[in-house]
Image (cartoon, rainbow, N blue to C red; front, side, top):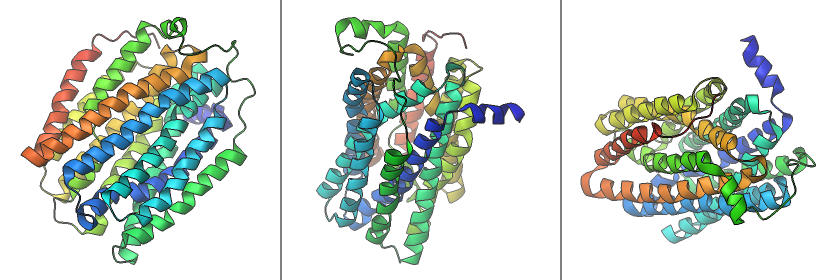
Length: 395
């Protein structure tokens, strides 16, 4: 217990600020996103395959944009200057959801939101590595992820309460979501003081051939593994749609995201600390096994209890692997190329997420929801095989 709190005290203040900014933005985003599949399916009559396509394109766009923001942040040696407008775009997009009357308008709002996420993502992740000592980097990423995920379960909780209070009025809930988004931008702008020289090397073009060669074989192995892994982890919108298939009130369906994110939040920091002292490959393999079990439970369940168990297992898997992959990238990339490294990692993961979400939607529409989760389990097994060949640095 003493060691745990000692580690927390050593985590820099900048990591805490970034974590609370993520928390506020996630409260806003998840108030919207936990209801969005239901809003599109019930109020707008959008087919599941189109929902999957919109989710995949939006998330893939965010991850692809991270390449450019990461490269720029490496070149100028500054992270906050890109993170602020990134969070700003996320805040500006929120009123558009409340005003949307067609799937096309939802798509536009999602794209603006995700472009903002893409702009801020790689500089934020690189900033955490810049300000944190290597020996507690896993704990720092785990803490940031944990605070982020507190927002991710508070958002759906607020959405459920307001849906019950306002008789399933989606748009009223979306207007409330605007407030924490703008608070996040204000906290980042006024609260975060970036180190004057986060990287101490001479700046050159990060995507020059000689710089890309410096990323090295170990980095590209981790990046490739992350892309394969993402194929097994399609959009969480499908968890919400799966819950809709059991007999529960519409307003209570976002509780599946609450359950997942509570578990995610509670496990992210402990597993982040654990990753500082055990084999990264072993922990990743354990996370894959948990995801396989989650997929099977979700495929077979026909009750509210079964869905919650499957979603909770999904949350455990997220807690084990999300911060871990960031730690592995930070460990294998040169310090002056971390933004670029996170950018390329997220580019490949973004393309994989687009394919995964589109494929999940097609499987769902053609063969039913169970086939989507069985396919995810099969890809997890293939990823487990690939992990045996990934080089590993000593802890």
